[in-house]
Image (cartoon, rainbow, N blue to C red; front, side, top):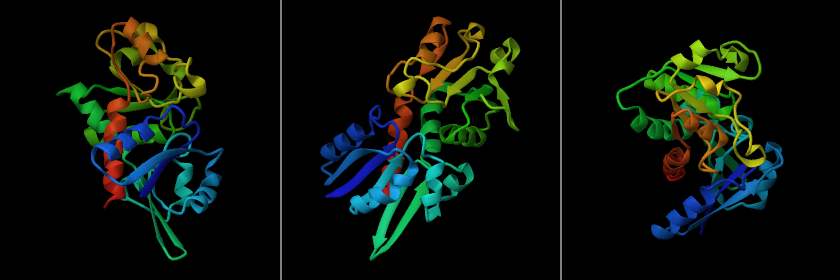
Length: 246
């Protein structure tokens, strides 16, 4: 039986285990998928030693950038994004090879495009971590202008206090790529001026569990369109399965 899994912290919110095990059952695939909670990414080598049958891992927050140091190879997209959410593991004798991929880019694009139709609204990406990097890469590929919003001032980003009425009203697509709204942050939300939202806005939250986050709830109150990350999860998971079986 082939063995796959997910690493992250937290992992209890993740639906990947159910998604893949349901897939394996429905498609009569002799495999299993389980979640692995790591205190930090330095625990990855010990995990691989303890489970020598692992053929692939999904990677979730907060390890999408830190895991790069453990990859022996990156595919072109992961190298450009500088974030990895999928690991293909192979062994030949005592030699271990770990190839890193980023399927979040394709997953996000697949989820977003049907919502936009022919429109390409300017966007705000909330967050600057691994997930936000994948979103930004997808935006570049789709030809959508965007600004990255971060709590920390740095080159090429704006901070939350800079989100004026003019900025928010002129950026109709707002993506939450932070962990605010899930896990230990389940009651929290990005500190944007929600009073400037309207019916012309689309709020896309990469979080899918819970299915409706405080970020989304605040958008609904202002008549904005909202979407969670479930379709993105499913799309990126199928891409990960393709990579594991290349």
